[in-house]
Image (cartoon, rainbow, N blue to C red; front, top):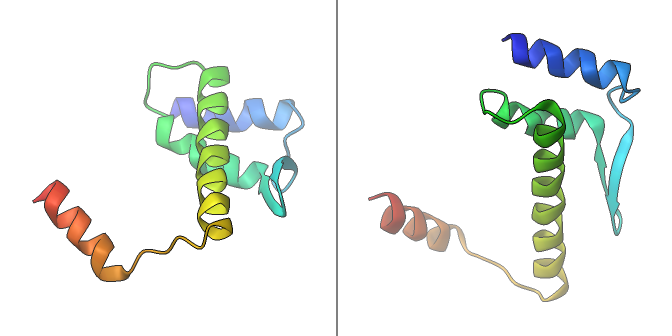
Length: 91
């Protein structure tokens, strides 16, 4: 919990008030609120704040680039394909 509080304080001190744009991929905007939410995944990791922020931002950018690629190339996945994947992978 202290690490999460430290992240909130650091983001506020750095001027990353919730809602500020931190990245833009084509027409998709990643704001500081989305970045903060992604950072929560790494709150209990051994990474420092800067590493957590960078890893979270990298993950969001990668996810958005993959979605953009899929959209541009008309790649779709049916619900039953997703379900089958998880059944095969997770048992």
